[in-house]
Image (tube, rainbow, N blue to C red; front, side):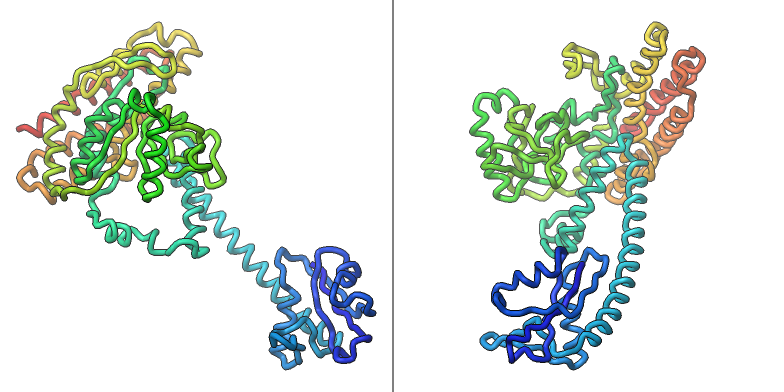
Length: 477
């Protein structure tokens, strides 16, 4: 930034005053651009520069000189300060030296703060990445956190909006209504799923495959009305449902979608652009072309949805204990769910989808088929796919620190359901065995071409099926 001062000897009232300014460009050219002083002689008496991204350095000099007792000329009509200060070049040089020193120290502080900030962001990323197999997902979470932090710090929204107690108080919702609670009441935390074609790398939860039942359980557990619109109905009149989506968003209520844009899982439609030409959403796992704020942006994105869920009014307040008890008593049914067939999105062909104990046994059976692992290329595909059921096992029945959700749900239920204490505690013991096995599978050799290596994994998986069934049997005993 270039700083300068000049005098105007043709203006008697400015005698003894220096006009101080700044520019990124040529000083002489900038001085001659002073429109109200055209055809008046201007003599530049001082120039200097400082390396900084900041602007308004001239105003800092004005303010400093005024604080030191130097007179600043004012506009006649408004009484506001002009850029004219009654001082000498030496006075400006002294002031500028002090200000440059302050700018230097401010820059050091800014750099130190920046280094600390980026270190914290890096730590957040590594922490998030350790809990997600996909580093892009972790990065998107960090970006969204930073965006929310920016909104808060800039005062663009009230800080209270980011405080959990404020949100719960104004929504009048219970603290227990968190991810652990809903993953439990839907059955996701207690269900094991397996696709017989593991080369497709599917790792879907129960709610992904049986959305209707799971969605109903979730809304029953919190007492809200909802309307679920399925694919055929959406395709009949997409304009009608687009209008409905826009109305809901205008009311401040996002719309839940399964299959929004390119996302096959559940996501949120939370905004729109150009009167609905584009819909904005939060999706997992990938945002192909995010807008500047990190949201997915699709033209007619709702038309690809398998279902749309519009959230209605709260009609009643269920007791937490009743919702948790219903979920726990449903665990044996999840263990013995019959297998079904699903259409593979990737291959557009039917494949078997199994649940509960059968999911473990089918997982082990696939690893027993030698011809699936007789080349390196096949092994590489199967290794990635075989990682998916392990993710479900570890996510549901792992430790709380890993992200396991079954255990914290059951531990919370001990407070609400003393009549089920024995069943819950025994179930937790068997889940400890599942946690041990999930660690064992993680540590076990993944040399899939080696039959002995696969045999070790098969033994662990079949043992998991045993403990999984034992855990479920505890509930009705």
